[in-house]
Length: 257
Image 1 (cartoon, rainbow, N blue to C red):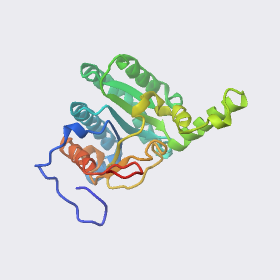
Image 2: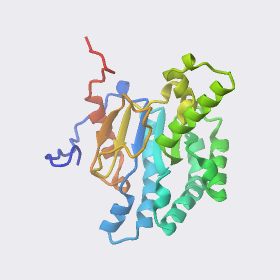
Image 3: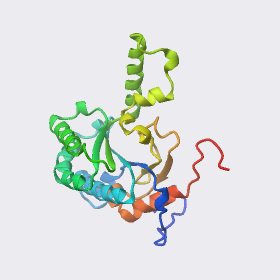
Image 4: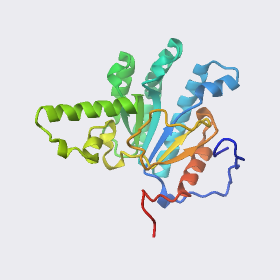
């Protein structure tokens, strides 16, 4: 079910048809609800994370088939280190398992892996798995599967400000030269070039907040909140979220004639 809490939730209409000419170029997802999905089934939280990993694989393929150019997934935030050690350790091991089993399929489908976040702070085995996946898929030219891993937008912006300030101090940059373009070029999403800003943010599990995700980049993104926990998301639910996006009128602060 979809929409805002407290309102009657519509059911998915099987007759809904996506306009393939208006598929968003960049979709970003806050994958929320793994633990709650598991708890509802009287399973440990890590069981939800394992099933969530399987959902990543399924939705990646659906997104690729639809022609989405960038799929950014919020996998682990800079705040997630506050969780219990057992859960964090399990989450740090997931990329090892995930990429070991999924990279061949990504290569077969011409999907490139990229990562934003402070990956140098991850455990060595996690860093190795991530770096190997990036290296093995770097020549792929299709959809970018972009993981936000140990990522926090406020930290990203602070890092950008520090880097720009250093350029000013060393006389390599004037204050007058600092503009929106320059700031964007110092953010972690700069590698996505003109696709850095998501067209739509999808958040699962019924929560309606940003959680320190792409604060600069989502200035004009559309938001779709869905009640399903991330492990329960399938192709039908994902496509319905995109259908809701396609019903929006994006004006970017102006007026459509």
